[in-house]
Length: 514
Image 1 (cartoon, helix red, strand yellow):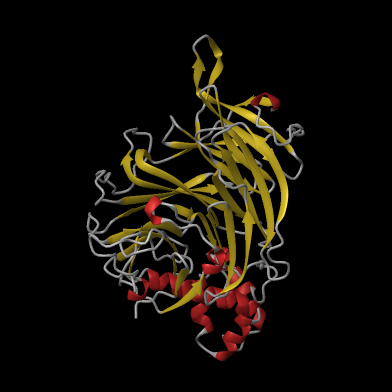
Image 2 (cartoon, one colour; image 1 turned 180 degrees about the horizontal axis):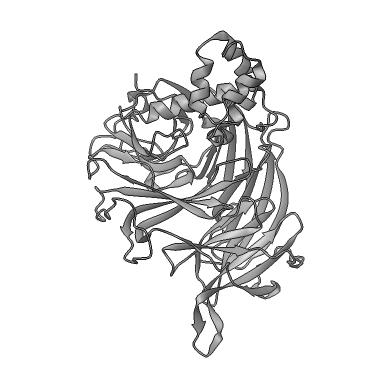
């Protein structure tokens, strides 16, 4: 093989896995030199998609160097194997950084904590009171740069984030609600997140919205979508913030007609939204149809918005629309909770729309497949079964992975991540966090063929908070103690744990089994 020309060596590696190519690289210097100078060796593997979401910020498969692509590949396969080994993980290193300069609003006695978190590789963002904080981290976890976005104070908020496809900008949609005047406003920001120009906050659109008691907001350039509550019905509001156009859409249910007109459809009640990663379309979860998602197209002829910051419903143009005929069905009847977790790249042009169901109930419909080997866990808090249903786009086929807890019940003092998902593989929990507890995080199949498993990890003592005052002693109103819940995040893609406290955050890096 070593006597072959490099182009034939590259051809002979075609169709192998990323792990196989990494193994070949480690056999001899000659093969290593060929692979490290030819990206095609890795990009032609049958699971090259495992690398797309792990590339350095702003990099693309076409633009990244061959040696940087190899470093990404070697790290990806090693981490996947380590997290799937079945041995409880221990922290290999940690970084402590000071958050006191950010003046966070943190009052555990009144259940006021940072929230609305976002984590994507080296970018972490969250809301504290009326401020959104965005931080750019170095590979070791040090805060390299940071910026804050100030919102209207004394309001209620819903926040959504989106990183542009080229990885250069973070978009933020801030839904701001005045609970006294019953008005709403959505503000859209764009913030450069590469080193050059980081933090130059630009407010690119502000639009008044009708008030809703069940607010949802999602963003993906160039669209923002919200739900609108009017006359007891939940409608869909869509804005193209690049063109300043928008509509309120009455989404109709193909399965139900109005009582007085068999040709007129009843409206759906929207309780969940996700914007399609490639098409001008929205995934919709309806309150009645808990066993499927629907897809509705965003009109390309939405009218220009002229009402500015007014929240009056009457100023919006309205339209009735049907979802696409073919919904996205789940392979079960219902679940204790269904969580749309977002999109994963599965090729340069394809995505998977992931949803995770907690304690699913097998379908009774003989025409529907049941979750393989899964019985619905009881609704007791000590039982847990998660099922990931991935809808592959644009083919619209489906993959199902069931992940029951291996011993049937969850041990006491175990922090279970997986019921609040920020993105595929990125989990959030608000809990009392100390070394007397253990952590447990779901890891679904990531393309390296290790299968789905529960990753268990120990919590280091340096994450412990001070012991609470003894009974009868005065407790400081804004101090954090060991039994207070604090926000923490675990990223399965990087094996890193982020734990935030009142004036400091601990970044636990590179969990390992040795």
